[in-house]
Length: 550
Image (cartoon, rainbow, N blue to C red; front, top):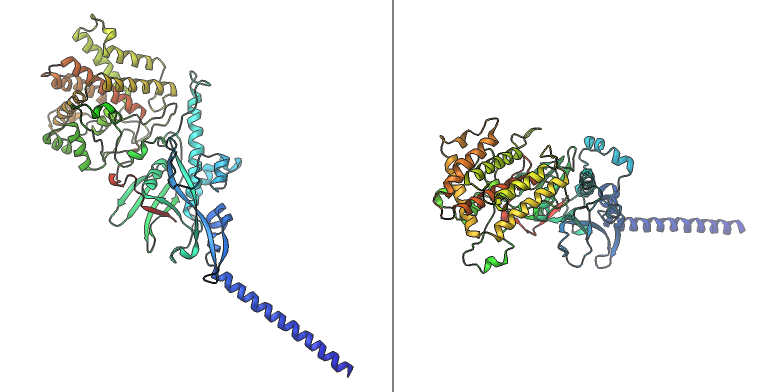
């Protein structure tokens, strides 16, 4: 009997163990099913979203009696450092500046020294990662941009023997800001397979400009967007129940040096065809009954017409401009150089800006420029000397005349020994910047706005008329010395024709010369990429339409 009782006890224990195991299996199965209900967790892992995965976790939703996945992604924006307001109030903003702290705050892997040394080789063999969210590569590239560009700018600045150790670095105005957004995977559309970052339409356009990416297609009707440049590619698609999503891809080698867009706040205007002008900050113009508002926008044909109308151009002049407005370069860039604010930042070597016009800037299509601004400047100074002698200014206090001030200013610049206009030292750039400021001050303080506009309109009228007449020399500006030929024609024909009937002939001469000199100096400090052209509608400036980065 004892053995029977023992057998029963053993069987009971075995049954209890089996029941416990079965119960445990059921419990594990239930937990597994609960965990499976938290879908999307594996899509928020480190291979997909990098260091942002560290903030991913499961949370139990009591109302729905299931687990859900909570993750964080960046809200990417372009911040102006001279304006402290945040894109989204109440959230802390982390700025991308390439520093160790910035890498850590924005949750981007910091490249070690060996990786930095081999970064070029890595970029050359890098292909699109189908597993990783493209915004992870975007954040990394933005850090690389800041790191390399600031190092290059400092290298150029310290290369000047006159300024080495005596000049402080520039104050960059634009920077990419990152804010953290918390999301739940249950609210992500089923078609989405990876977490997405968020930005706005205007910030996306500005960010592309800062990265050296130029728009090839910008179709709002279909929201078909495509941009490329500097080893990057951006394409868009419409995601049902979400909106417009873009994908950022690294397709080649990227360089963030001399061809990088100036990080100036004015880039936010130029991207959309608008050009900040020298008169917009003049408070006294609002009380001057003779003054008029100026509209400088070259982003579309309609805006070009409005711009010319705001200057006071006649319908005949506008029609002539539409037919032909290019000699060795489009005269839209002449207007920008005459009246546009300086975009260049003090103490910085960056010179590239976004092209606000519908015209291509084909100055440097290959390795060598097809024409040179310095040759135009040499021709200008030569004609000024001839004009001064002809008018008799040499005998009558010439040192007090505007012509002398311009010639003396350029003589001081030449004494610094610049050789190549694409490789100007910081000291030369600063002197040219000073020259622009002096001419701007003259145009604002010593002349009437109406006189400036009248001279510009007369200049445009004569130039467009010449460009539309096949017998005029401007139609044959293809010789080796085209710069000298252009200046010769401007002084010998254009200048004489715009002032021959004027009562204040000398004053208009001075205004015209000041505008031409300012324009050439302005073009020396700024440049445009040959593939850049304004394709973005101006009404999208400041658009807060959400754009998702997949």
